[in-house]
Length: 290
Image (cartoon, rainbow, N blue to C red):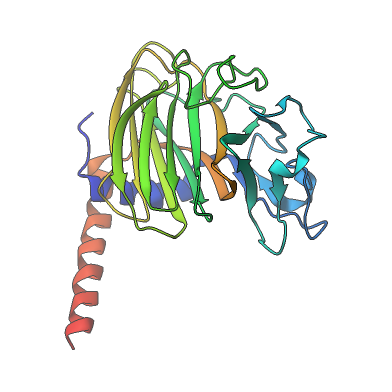
């Protein structure tokens, strides 16, 4: 299938997602309390939506090992805490990371003529460390110490996954199985809204482990992709992991994680949308001139 121009493709994805199938939407809004150190707080209270929910998370760090509910460093994962509504906090410190992972293989039900859209807001609020996400991993084991086999870690190169991170300086880095494959510069000192689009080759689904998948990552509504990368024969599953890394005592905030499946936008179906976008752009420019 011929790829649409970036601005038209992204617009079609954003509009088509309204009619797609949402597997997971997590607002991280804990309506039961003012704050919780349990990442699985209030899963049944309207915090999550989607066909795979309610969906629990594994949590862990490279400082305290693999525990479903950490006792010695439970503060590492906090939901809706300290007045920071509708957000997940991952607290890293002194060269350690905190991580949470939905306990589900989110490749469910995606076909050859469909794409997966992953949306997420990451706010690297502190001066040190970074926040990031990985997807496409095949190992659903719990977390381990750094370097001993925790899935989703940027430190390791022996797992098939794709990931990216951002820090407070706006530095964006993309990785494939532990190898850095691209960088970009975003606006410093603010939260960033990411959209990752994963598509197949038109004959095979993007997570079937046979064909070639294409990963495109966009940020902050910009129609130009930060990274476009082909993944051949690697994505056979799709476990996600959110990570927060700290150099001191650093909080990375995550909001509105959404994983959806939508039909691949066809060029013919987007012609009217393209015309509308052009008309809207012209009208906005004319108003500014007036």
